[in-house]
Length: 291
Image (tube, rainbow, N blue to C red; front, top):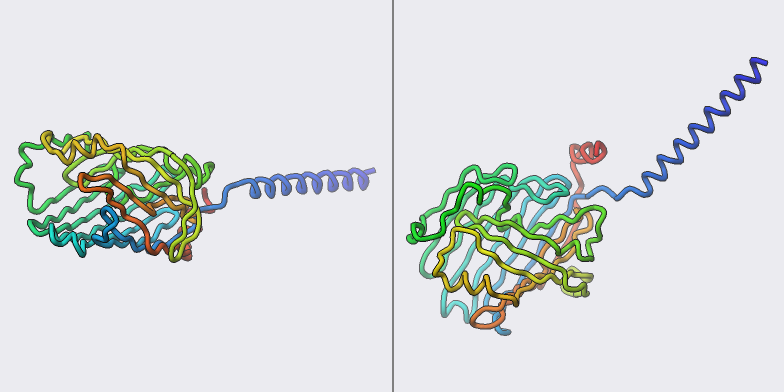
């Protein structure tokens, strides 16, 4: 009798273990794949009404929990007859499903008339310290930037990395529909994106889908009320951004930006767009397994 009871107990326990294992396997099959570290190297061409006016580059490493991005640009050709402009910027910080949380940002921009450097330290999407050299001569007549304006923001480089919820497709409306609060060290503004369509593109290093997003610019503070350029941007309905997916990191980044200017259509478009995988660190793997 006892032997029969023991055998029955063992059979019941084994069946329970099989059911539990089946549930675990099913959960793993349905769970979204964890984000992987990804690299981006892109070269962009700048054109105005069809004429080449410069080039830009972007290089970044986007890990499951961190990112670092460098960008640079320089005007060439006909643009140098008006102004010779060059610049470089960098940003790094933490990355989550909520989006980037920058820790450092730096930008240097020079043209025929002036050169300016901006450095910011940030924490929890808030500015902790900012240094601008030289200070703009018209700072006193600009709309004051409040302390509240320096919270819940991203810098202009970090704004280029747009997280998409794991439950949402990278090639649908969720890639676009968002409002990005940006502070560049001097001005605070919002960039609102909305989904228009998905199309296919082909360039060196990339063939695949991009999401076409309409874009709108809303000035908040740090600008001059009498600025014609700010007024033009705020009223401009002819702006769009094409976003390409980085599946490993589950984010989207700009492939093309088009802005109507008073001189014609300004287009920044990728001539080369290379996406690669990077081995995640042991620390990242542990963090992912704990989620």
